[in-house]
Length: 253
Image 1 (cartoon, rainbow, N blue to C red):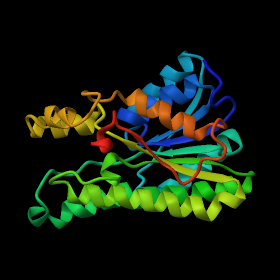
Image 2: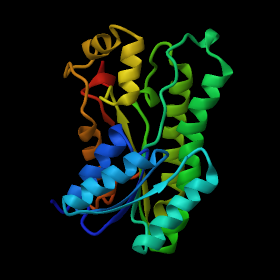
Image 3: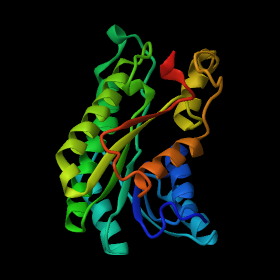
């Protein structure tokens, strides 16, 4: 174990797979007490058992971030379990379809916006309230390089991730004077269930994206989680309202 997050209580949404599950492992290894929130309880239970077996402190709560009451319940569970909320990683998200804008259905748009934008909105409000009650904290939202640049045939996803960037900056500005830092990570293509699905339905997509990435590869989820851990830590106390690309240089092209 390290001490980057030693003693901190951190809530992670979308914690049952991908970047969220990697964050659970990384944050726990860095000394945090973690609460894992997601819809799939079987996976959460397995992951909590794994973290405890490795010497960490962890608990889980079933949560659908698109439901405001679930988000409130997740924060309340965290505070009742560990006494406070020091950090939150709002990671839950969906990818949607790769479809030209004029052919994209309203159902796809609604699903992507509901999880990726309203989900962050639902979570960040009770998180801020809990942090205000206990002297401050740090929040990291998971955006995407798609929140900074355009990607073809992904208009709903691009719009949603740009909205996450805007919400991050607005919250950072509003609560900076009250001891709460709000930042975002903007991952490039990262190995996860979402990207595996995208790559499976779009042969050649991974190779195309990697060809535009100076490091020439897909990121591992632990690489994104490590960046989020740093943003949640006390190592960067003057950093707020920042969107940190973790993308192998993709947006430099």
